[in-house]
Image (cartoon, rainbow, N blue to C red; front, side, top):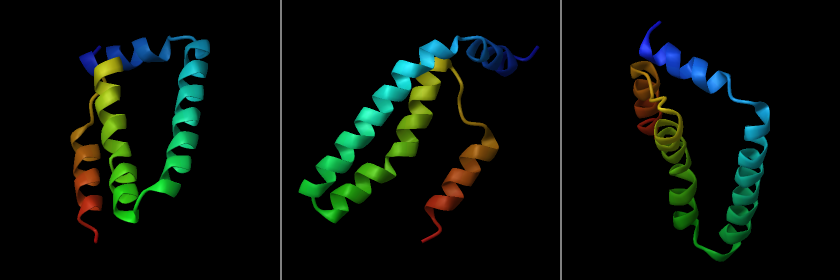
Length: 83
């Protein structure tokens, strides 16, 4: 079994009960960020919202040891230059 498959199998075996507090935390953070967006400028809001996928990728690597594949990285880079 490849190393990445072993990591994914380890993550898949975690109980669903572990995901509930994490989902609640993300929901709370999302609600707080939308509330805070009422008190900042549009450019700051754009920067905060644009950084979300970066933090998801970093935390998935830190917490679960699952990094982006080359295809995912290439797709994310191509989307960032779509403007």
